Image (cartoon, rainbow, N blue to C red):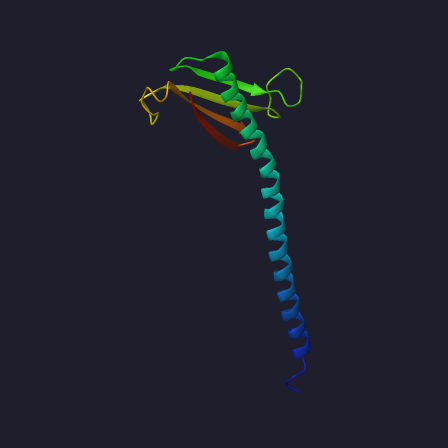
Length: 125
C-alpha cells in the first residue's frame, strides 16, 4: 500500500510541466507582438527623420543650425503623443565626423522619434 498517492503526484507533475510550457509559449508570443508593434513605430520614426533631411535640404539650412519639427499624424494641428517628431543638425564640413571640403559642403544628421522609438539618418551635401 505504499503506492497509494502516486497517481495524484504524477498528475500534479504533469500539470506543472504543461503550465510551464504554456507560460513559456505565451511569453514568446507577447514578445513577438510587442516587437511587431515596434516595427511599425520604427517605420514612422524613420519617416520623420527622412522628413527632417528633406526639410533641411529644401530650406537650404546653413551649417551650425538645428531644425525641430513634427509630423501631425492625427491631423489635429497640435503636436501631441500621437505625432512623431524630428531634430535635424546641420554640421560644417571637417567637424564632428563630417568629411572635409571640397567633397562635402556640410553633413545633415536627422533623428526621428515616435513612441520612444528613435531612428537616425545622415546625409551629406
